[in-house]
Structures are given as C-alpha cells and as structure tokens.
Length: 313
Image 1 (cartoon, rainbow, N blue to C red):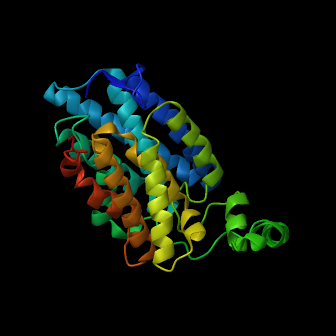
Image 2 (cartoon, helix red, strand yellow):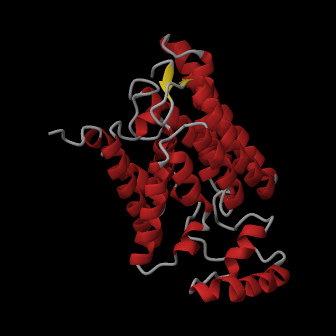
C-alpha cells in the first residue's frame, strides 16, 4: 500500500496511510467502546484479547520474516482489525473466539496475501469466517429473537405516541421494540457487541465520510440496496437495520481501499450487490454469519469489478 492515498472526492487532499487508519480507529472506537461498556466486564476481556492478539501476531511475524510495514501503518491497521473483530463478536463467544479471529485475520487476511493493501477481502471478515468455521457454537447471532426489557413501559408509551402522531399519517410502522433497543443500556442477548448501537454508529459515520475515507456513494448504495431487498423479500427494513451489526458493516466494511473496486462503476456494482446479499443472508435465518457471508461473496468479485469501466466513444 502506498504511503499516501488521495482523498475522495477527486481533490488535491492527500491522506497518509497511517492517518487513514487512525481516523478509522477513532470512528470505530465510538460504537465499540459503548458496546463494551454496555456488555460489561466479559466484553472488556474480549476487546483486550482481540486487539492485543492482532498486534502481537503481526509483530511476531515481522520479526520472524524480516518483512513489515512502518510501525505507524501496521499498528493502525492491526488496531482497526482488532476493533472490527470486537464489534462483530458476541459476549457469549468469549475471548477465545475473538482472539482466534484476530490471529487468523493477520495470518491469512493480511500476511498470506502479501501484506497490507493487497487483500481484496477485508482481513477481519476473513478471520471471523475462519474462526466461525472452527468454533460455530461461539458465533454471535445476527437474527435477534428478543430484546432487553429495561425501561420498557416508559419507552413503550413514548414510542406509541410518536408512532401514532408522526409515523402513522405517513403510513410508516415503527415497532415498539425498536425504540426499546435504541434506548436500552443493556446488551442484546445473543447479539454482537455493537448490536443496536445505532446512534453511535451514525455518529462515527460522520468521521468516516467527513474525512474522505470512503466514496460516499458506496455506503449510500449499500444501504439503499439492503433496505429495498429486505422489503422485496417480505421483511421489515427497520427491524433488520436495528441489528447494529448490519449498519456497522455498511459504514466500516468498505473503508479498506483494497477491498472495494477501484473503478467508480465497479464500486457502484459492488455496493448494490453487497446490499442485496446482506439482505438475503440476514432475512434467511439459516445463515449463521450473514454479514460475513455477504462480504465474502461480494469481496470475491472485487478483482473482476475493478476492471469494469464506463466506455468512451
């Protein structure tokens, strides 16, 4: 990966690679730290193990092979991988799952493909996929059957009032449990650490898009394709989005430059495909890791989509 990358849109602004990663880490830390705080002491252990494992494995491999990037770049990238793994892990999975996912992300997702900037599958997604295959009983669910009941009565009254006075005239139905998830300070049983951390994920997205870390049309197309596809499949788009892992993946999944097509047209096709796959796998409860599955399938087409360009006459 080059030491500098051009910001987006096509401006003269240049970002260093280490600067890009530290901006990503700052944004990602907002929902992740909230999720860890909400989930309690067990989540602290998961976060420490995932992040430290990513840093140590990369450091050991650099010492053994004598090949590595500058410390600022590698530390920033490793931290971003660790944070992504923490966000997508469940408390029930424990430190073992998170540590294995981080280690495999560095070993296979980064090193096996030749180093940073050469992977067309997000390293953290690769690590999560492999760890989920090895330990399927420790996977965090993305199909949430129940929610926390803390503050349910007051929230329910407010939600019912807002729903009747604001949304019903617009023919939009807002389930009460959505309001409970958004306002609850308790972790969602069976969910990932960032599940239902929607306000903080949206806050973090301001850093991602404000700092030109990803072309804005990519997450917009992923989001639109996801919502439309869920609706076409007979699901509730709002209920599907309230699972914070989906929104987190839409915001942070495409930020790694090498994991999205280089051409604008290819990136648009990738975004539409990714959103549709996220919807299909999320609605289909038989898929154990819907977000990971969607990124694996769409990511496998990145080299091909990078060649798609608008022809000139």
